Image 1 (cartoon, rainbow over the protein chains, first blue to last red):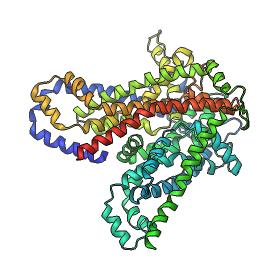
Image 2: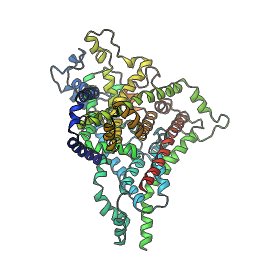
Image 3: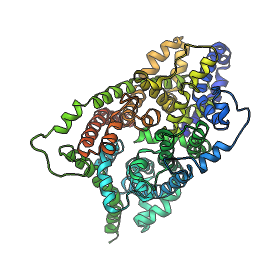
Image 4: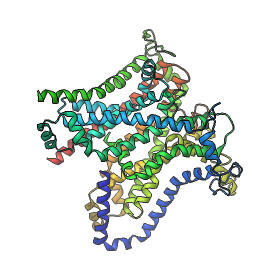
Length: 307
Length: 298
């Protein structure tokens, strides 16, 4: 929808330029003022990232000079290497790479479970006459916004009893549970616009629930799948609380390892290594963002409003 | 037979979602509420303490840390609301000055892709007294520059607010931009023809038209503030002292540091109540909007 709005807006821009050729000229001065203001705000947003990147390439002697905005005089990749391979968390000095692989290992089953369950549920609620679909959607709507703290302790108790506490699976299962309400609402909102005739025809054609899903619905869900994929990847990758409370010692995701080594460690603070580690943690979602920006915006706003 | 088949399959397909909703959400919430009336400490203790039924809640509201958390919640909510205001201003400017829309949007939105832990670390580094912005300004000759906000209890919260605004600004801008774009283009031309001044156009026409967007932003922001945990951990870890605790931080702390399930549950229940209080307007609003949309269709 945002994409449509954007294309409509650019189209509108073109026609407006034709209709009102004077407009551009008349607001020249205010136009410059606006651009200056926007650029200043953009700097406020962009500068921290710049500072972090610059810091991560500086040798430690340059950092102690205190010129955080300056470019490195000598560029060094050592902080990055250190952050990846032998940054310390407590007594464990294996770098942040174990967290990276844990996060990846958590991400895969989370994607599979959460998208699998919500797509099927959204499809059933949108296109099959489920009598209590309305009330159920309302309940999901509430569940999507419930604070995690209220369900955290019982989930810990259950997961510990099942015997998977502190494993990748525990974190992935909890992520899937937390994502289910919102994703279901998103899928349901997408599928409800599928023409009824199509489904009726398919049912007449002796298509079963599952066959219609696999052969008709899934092939047409490309767009929404990308949006949901981005939403889940960024939430799971950026999550801290679930990883902290369910990851135990052996399944800590990247954010938890980063936070532990930078915030709670009492050892010597090595700024350039910390910044490199922070960037390493931020790179995967940033890559997703810059590669699929349009869908990213859609995913975030869908997650926000449609929920 | 065919009809029966189509009825049972959806039911089977819905079972996992139903189970999750009723066990992991409803069941869990009831369990937590129940626990908040017990004296459970490290492990759940299912005996309700009838003599002091609301004891956990009394302790909660008698605790300084909790009152600090509540105060911080209000400060954080008011402070972060600036993100909505600035988001609107930026969106209005980007929308008006179409040049560079894509570039600005990309820049303003990228913090949203970064985790709050990284955000916190980044700003922690900016606030570093000797090597961060303060050191830089002093190096330039501004000896009185004070930017060491994180070290003082009365300013640490503002640092967290600044970081949250940095993180959320683009999000609110994107929502506002979507709202602005849905406004009928005729209004702009009509206003131009009528010679309505720039400020009056925005304050008297555009903002009232976008009240739904503003309200959505406000509710989302409040819900986010109630959940504020990661950013606090990353920026201050609650410190200095307990000055930057939030209810979310308090609940986690009561569970994992103090190992007190009953107490943590009571804090979580209050969080739930706050969420519901914020949530109610959203529900009413959605119902109202849906009715309006239906009316528009007919």
